[in-house]
Image (cartoon, rainbow, N blue to C red; front, side):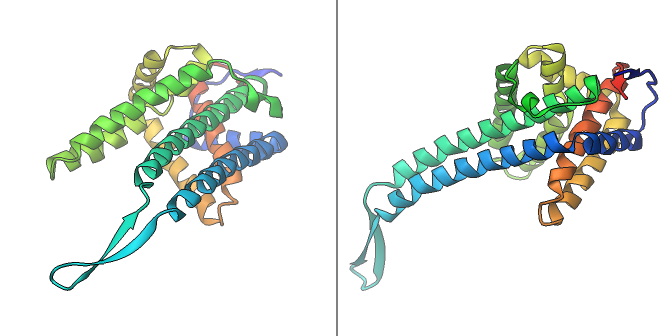
Length: 249
């Protein structure tokens, strides 16, 4: 399909493009969202199925203390196991979230390249490992900021502002991995440079995306099946246009 040659950019054009392409590719996008939701639900169900019997195995004993008061003592030794399982599934849920996010980015880039996508694009695995490594790096940075947040007042401020800035400036890292095949750390640096270079446009895009996702969420969550694909394609359009790359009409 012929590619658009104009590089004039506006956030409204980005969302108009996203909405137009969503209508043209509604089948793959809706199925992709449903598969992502099903995968997340299945993982949560497995977690609960494993966790509930362990928690139920705890026994509670009433112990009377010297001063006549009663205390509840939990026995069974499963508290540590509960924590371990919770941590393992927390990591798995985060990993699945990164994979889903990367595949949505892949699909959005596919739309800007060819105008049309099929369901198979959500199951491609090229460069997925690099995206996950980059996501882990960002998680470590957020963890460090969280540790700084233990410090009263100043630490809280640093954590709050730092977490927002890292998330904001790194939001395009997956695009640089999947499109330009950048390495993990290089993709993060490229995203920071890209956002910094086009700061005013990206701020407006970010705020518009938050609004779109919020509206989608309050519509009983069903609106997210539209808001997420449209927002993903608006970001892909922004990435292409501001990098002065052709976009499929």
